[in-house]
Amino acid sequence: MSDPTATTRSDDAGPRPQVPDFELIRPIGRGGFGQVWLAANRTTGQLRAVKVIPLRPAGRAGSAAEPRSAAGREIHSLTRLEANLGRRHANLMAIHHVGKTEQFLFYVMTAADDVSGEAVSREPSYRPATLESRLEAGPLAADECVRLARQLLAGLASLHEAGMVHRDVKPSNCPFVDGELKLADFGLVTEASPLVSRLGTQKYMPPDGRMDMRADVFAAGLVIYEMISGLTVEGFPRLGKRADEVAADPSLSALVRLVLRACQPERNERFEDARAMLAELDSPPERAAGRKAWRLAVALACLAAVASFALWPVEPEPEPVHVNFVTEAPFFEAAIYLDDQLQTKPDGTPCATPCTIENLPPRVHEVVFKRDGLPDLAAGKIDFAQTRQITASWEQ
Image (cartoon, rainbow, N blue to C red; front, side, top):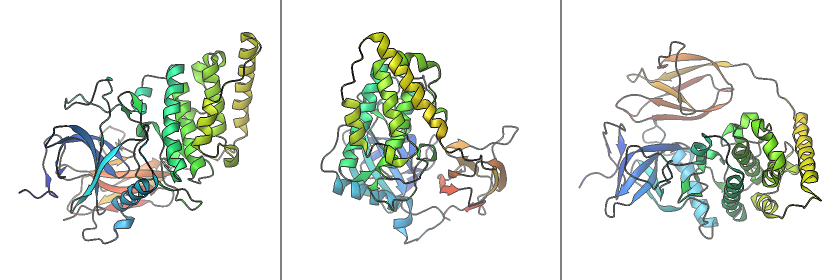
């Protein structure tokens, strides 16, 4: 019998983890510090998504500090999720099995639809459908905005009702299964507490940095904003070319008001949790005396609300920093990825270790090193405002 914890080579995917009962076909995404694979059950042939996380940080063979590792954090989150969530919710991604080998934590999930709208398949063209991929085509239709906003908030509200916070609500964590939006990636889920760590995706975090239920509300508001406007969160609260349509459409204007309250810079002015936000979304809109009066009232409300955000405190743009990247001998010449983006020189060639990359934003970045013949080496989420040299090594 083959060793279920071994890795094998794959011409198209590099070193391939081995997990019991499943054939890992190819990587289809990343989540936190793990890699998500399209997989087939060896007995039934059913296709699933399997997330695989190394049990020990790369370069720390034999480390006993599992609770501090990415896998330890993921185990903690999944344990709390299972203990607190009384039942599965239709808008939370279903987790069918959690297991460990000697090298990996893995868990098995429902596979997302294809971006084409078809079901998952083994075809090389298969690409998981997420809200992020759907937004590549621009803003969503008004009825679609309302439908998906309700599904997102319903899934998030089920976590909040169980006393949990997600901490990483964003479009890429909203896959579609049978056309329905699911909130996924539970690697940062934990109990709601004033002491919750500042983890997540920086641009979806609120200004106060408290990662509680109101922070989830803030992130959900930004996701709904992206659905409405077709703009990225950096454009918030502008509506761009859709401003006139929003002013004329009661459902869109109601969503904009919902978003503006969810994304208030003062945390106490936001919805308390996703349940309150969902209740507001489902409340009947007030009837205006006539269509013209309704349009005028909505336009004025939107203008006033957007203008209020001019009062947000504007932080001075921090100076960019230079950061050194080193992989220890003999594994030099590793490519450097920051936030899933390959770093390149001005001439377009990849940056390779050891090297210095200049003019980087001094914020938290996810750092990954890649080298042919070796598994990806995740250095973790590192704050460049504090750390100017990242040194990592593969296990030997």
